[in-house]
Length: 51
Image (cartoon, rainbow, N blue to C red; front, side, top):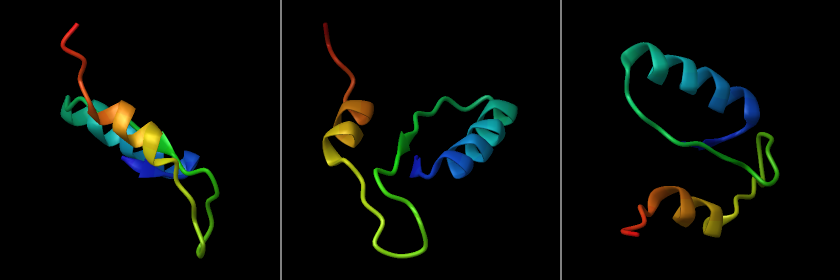
């Protein structure tokens, strides 16, 4: 999931209720327009290490 803090919190409650694992990445800058996200954080959240 990628979103602002409030959206991530709400989504995490739904995932917890459904017993579905998930990860969230906060937007670097949120709002209605010109949001920003750190793509490196997304990559790290999605990639599962084989170590």
